[in-house]
Each structure stands twice: as structure tokens, then as C-alpha cells.
Image (cartoon, rainbow, N blue to C red; front, side):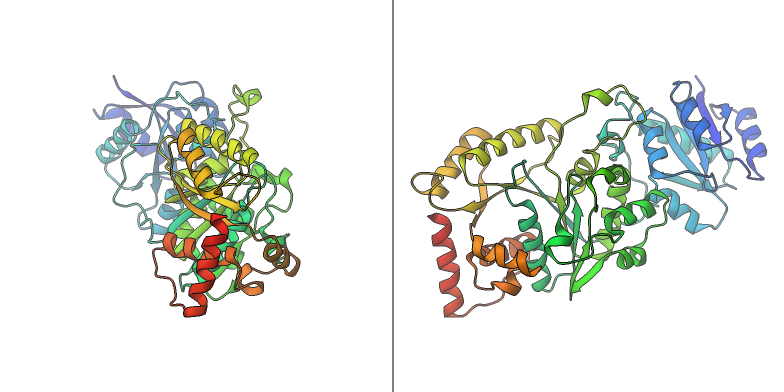
Length: 436
């Protein structure tokens, strides 16, 4: 049976000749619809009458969201560019088009690319409104012509609702990683109310992540643009601020956020992302094939991250929330193996030795080992918040700051700076305080 293909290469001088060559020759390809714009292409893709789409880089209003919706409908995408136009080819790849060929390629080569693309795209079993729709398809073949992923690592800081200290940990880890000499980018991706700009005393009306996502959606984001959008807080540390208002969450589409993180890998050695808490599905939108999902950005970050930190509070209520959240994460993204961090460890909420009791409870109910304990230090965190600075700037000897430095060093895989006798005493005091 011939492969059913849509085309959307309107305005290209070679369109008619290519379509005729594909139809006439025995390539196993049949062009069933020549679409005039993206809207028509998406409409016919939803009918299920085609298996692949052949697009040109000049197609107006083509963005990452449109490519994600095509793949959600089970339609593979192949791009065509003018011969030698590497900028257009890079733009298509940034939008999520994995196979890009020059327009003067042989019809047999284009037909072969269409068949290979179809073989690598799952069927339309996932609704386009599902936030995971815009994530890269598992098992999809990686083309050698794709842009390199870069050397940088992505660390996602996530955890349940209830203010367990996700943002405090994210800011602390990013700051300490930068102080260890590693180029670091801190990203605020909380779609329910990011506050990194306020915590660091930055202008929260700057474009930040939303501006980067807009550029990524049009395929025009590069390292230079990311540098322009990020605040340079200190040597080795840049900050990409979040949404100034929570109602702007539709600006952070999953595919665009994933593209921003991909570019961040080229810019920074470590990218630390502060995530929202929620992973739940919106049942009211389960049959709406065009509606975005609020939690899609969070899922995109967790899917793309090299390391996911699950931050839990240290009181019984916070621990119960963490147990439930870890179960939900296992159901939604079973391949993600989070690193468990217990924050705000102190005497009182948990009887006995808090570290031992918390580790035992979480091990029993989640089957996971607590990797890091962070002591509570309200005086230091209050001072940092009041000054709009980090813990290292206002409370360098804080036990929490010392623990965050150790956490950052292990995550960044770099040795901690050597400390003298006084520094070793501070580190020992921090461990004793966390142990209760």
C-alpha cells in the first residue's frame, strides 16, 4: 500500500515538479493533499487520512507547536529547504523536524526519508492535548545531521506542593555551582508562580523564559539570544526569570521549553531548573485536541533533565505529600529516577533522630534512599530573602549554605574547595544539626 502524504510547500518553485515526480514514479508514495497553510495541514492531519507531511522551511506560521500536533496525530514530518540554506535547516530541526533534505534531492531519497520518518513515529494513540505529546518520541531514530546536544547537564528541582523549599534549593544549588567555577544557568519554569526574580532582586517583568520560549517556537533561538534574555548575576551565573503572572502559563509550551533547555546545554555547563509541583492531567481537556496543558512544561523539564531532585519537607505532612508525589511521578514518567532531598530537617516535627526516622519512612513507603539532608536555618533564609541575595552572600557560615555547597559539588561532579580547621568545624556542625 502506498504511503499517504500531505504536502505544504506553498510558494516554492519546485513544488509542482516534485509532487509530480513522487506521484509518477514507483516510490510507494501518493500525495493525497496539497495544503496551502499550516491551518489546513493540521485540519487534514486530524482526519487520519495521511501518514506523513512534507514541509518547506518557508511555510508561514510553522512553529514547534504545529510540529508537535502533527506528530500527536501520527503524522511524521520531513522538511525541505533550498539547497545550501543551512540556517533554514537548523530552524526546522529546532522546531522538531528530525529529517531535513535539500529541495533538489532525488525523489527516491525524499520518498525514502518519508518512509523512515513514518517508521519512527508512534501511531495517534496519544491526544494532542496531552502535555507529553510535545516530548520527543521514545525510540525515535536520531539522525546524524541533527545539531549536537552540547556538553551541559540539566538538573530539575521538583517536589510536591506545600512549600518544601524547591526554589531555595534551586537557587542555592545554582549559586554554589557557579562559585565552584562551573558556568551555570538558573531557569524559573514554575507555571504556578515563579519567584526566583523576587528572591534575587531582579526585574520580574523581563522576558526571561517566556521570551526564550517564543524564539524557540519560531526556530530562531540561539546561544546569543539566550544570553541577551538571561540576567548575568555574577561570574559564571546567569538567570532566566519566569512568568511575571501565573495566567501567562500558555506561553510555556512543552516543545518550546525543551528547545530552550537544549540550547541551554550549549551555553552553560550546568542548567538548574526550578519546576512546578503538579503533574496531574486536566480531565476537562481530555477530548480537546487543541487545548494546551498547564503542566506540560513541567513534564518537558523532567523528561529532558539529566538529574531530577525531588525536594521534600521534613515534617509528617510534607513527607506524606512527597510519598504521593513520587508515586504520581512513577506513573507519569516511569523512566525518571529522582534523587531524594529532604529539606528543613530540624528537631521537633519528627520524634527521635529525624534523619534516621525520615529515611526509614521514605524507604518503607517509596523504596528510595534519601541522598541528601538539608538542615533548617530560618534566620539565614530570612536574611537572604530580605536582602534579595543568596545564602552565600549573607550567611556564608550557615549550616544550610554548607549543605547546599556539598550538594552542588556532588551534582556538578567537581571537588569542593579546600577548607581549614574552622571550615571543617562548620561542616561538622551542619551535619550534627541536620541529624538532630
